Amino acid sequence: MIDYKLKGMLNAHTVVSGDYTNSSNKDNTHIFGQVISGTESSEMMNYLLNMNKQRISDFKSMMIYNESNRAAIINQARVMEEVIDERTIILPNPVKKLKVNFSEILQNRRSIRSFTKLIMDKGDLSSILHYAFGFQKRKTNFDGIVNRGRFYSSGGGLYPIDVYIYCNYVDTIYPGFYKYQPYSNSLYPLDINRVEKTNFFIDNMIDIENMNLALFFEYTIDKTYLKYGELSLLNVLVETGIMSHNFDLVCTAMGYRSCPIAGYDKNYLEQILNLDSVNEHIIFSNICGRE
Image (cartoon, rainbow, N blue to C red; front, side, top):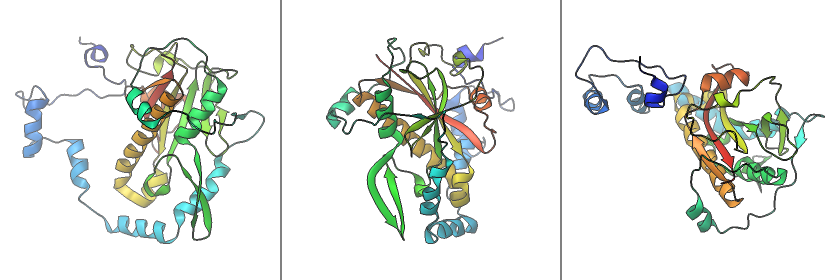
């Protein structure tokens, strides 16, 4: 019996299947020719081809969102989603300026999977989260509704991605899961009794013992589908990549290293985070620590 996890570095939630109707298709080189010729089905190809198809309902929804100023209205109310009580951890004020030349950040950024066991300062955590996912000082007036811009772009300005953080070694913050709240630049602890961090990732080369923290990006489908329909996934995957890269660059500027990771255990994470795995999905992850 082949151990597919070790053989192919597959996610635990990956379905392993084979095409037994054509024994000559032994690898992706052969399968690709079949996909292009249309004799083999590909979900990826079907999705890309489907982008040529625009439904009347999609146009109607986009026009309604744009003409009714709905994104600005939604964002004005999003602050009420945050929980501020005796358990909320209000992070220190972030540094006013990242004092590193941008070209140096680009030159120095690289993915690191092994870390030195050092505690992250809470102020560093605050600055990283704020500049990666928080709000700019700039304000924009949308037909009388004033919104602040964020440090990353979002399709339609809907910001459907929430960031869950597992703090491992952060000064005065107990190890566990927290939800980042960008309006208040705070962390809210999640009631999870037992977390097996060794179950987060499939790749055993990732230094989860010494990392400072791990990020998990959660997408709630109804936050974008009501406007963009089947185009939602494309927008969201691009947005998540932007957020993750923002995180990479800010970590580099703050003297830390990061590593975007696609090989996470989706089922396990959604279960312990109490996500429904229908409307709510973990779609990407990243880790951070000292080299």
